[in-house]
Image (cartoon, rainbow, N blue to C red; front, side, top):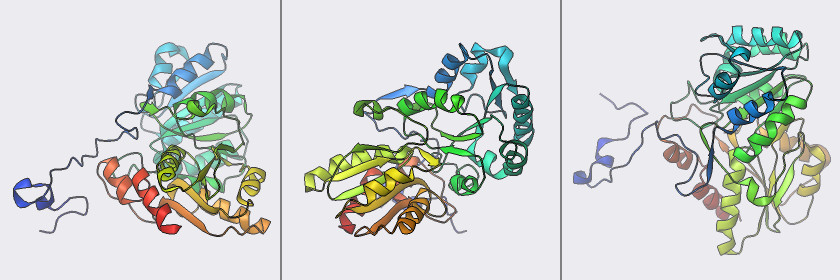
Length: 344
């Protein structure tokens, strides 16, 4: 019998047969490095803190409070928490009804379930009516090893075409904590990708402050401009430090708001002469930040020396441990460094 595409050939993991035993379990799901600073459940803690002064805040989930960190809100505000069971479409409809009554619902599930199962309900019940619902979804892009059923590699492509919907892709715990009150203050529907559990801390070292709709230069550089969102900004910063040893000077422009895009800042940074432009995202190469930026540059008549994308392939991805998969699909720090050096 042929091995499944999710299995490694046995000899590769057997030292007696010349292989090296590797841990490739899908349970290895942290995006933090072994020595990296992290913060537990930044979304859950930030929402609890916000709810202390915002009685309109309510939490709604589809059987995933523990896995979206909403269980912290449920414990702190049990009278404002609604468990809808495994029924994402019902959850979205309930959130729309709560918003019509003056509440500000934070609805949580996995990104695949919101984008694929509940799309029409979000479109018709929330976005068309411009209701004040915040949809916060875990496991964006390749942040789980459980294969295509749980890997939301196309969620941004699905949602970018939806009118009225703001799309946020935060980098780390620091930014998530700041984004929660910002999206609550914004009137209208929001889709935010969520990093859950023990989330890396990165941007606090750079004095970063989240502003809805704003892209910000985290570090400057003369040779390469990386335009990135989400966890790929963390990887871009790591790659930039590594490339200093090869005297490659890399700038990183963080774009946490995918829609509406900060066109002015992107145009200004990309128009600086002599720099290769690379867009890095934890999303399919189709329909995400890379194609959005490419459209901005073409419409503005900006022609950098080269334009490249670091993104997930247009494919159904394998199951396995995240470190293995990130290397395989080119979004690990090692893979980014190798790609950038090969392009220069």
